[in-house]
Length: 158
Image (cartoon, rainbow, N blue to C red; front, side):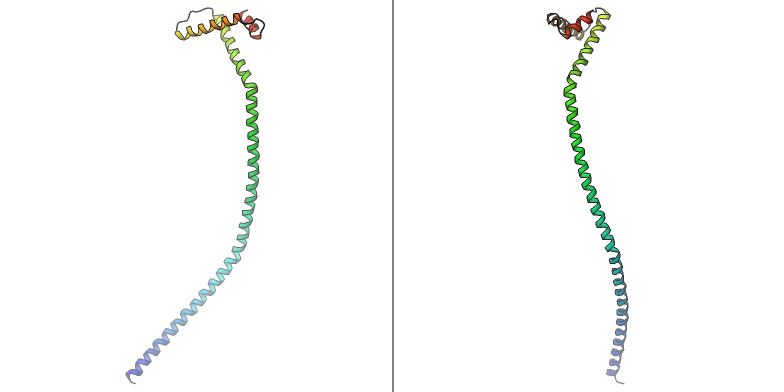
């Protein structure tokens, strides 16, 4: 056997080993590809119903959001109506009630002062208040006698 034949034999053995190793790798790769194909098929079988369920859930959520939008619009209308009603009631009854409360406070103050007897003011604020009261008395004395306010003043004075 010559050196050339020996080299040819070595190359032939190397190629045979290499082809065998490549065949083993290709067989294993085909198994992996078959398993991947099966896995993709299984995922597809499970994903399609999940996507249908997700689509159904999104539609249901959309319907609920439309209902919530309607409810929100109704609540806004009701709130606007309540606001308008409260402002109407406040405008209608608020002014007279405030006037009545202020008048009753004045009457109570006057009755309390009348029962306490005359006192001389000690501080500047009290003097100003006394001056306001005197001016009010002068205005009341010069005011027409037939009104409701005059009757109340007469009733308070006794």
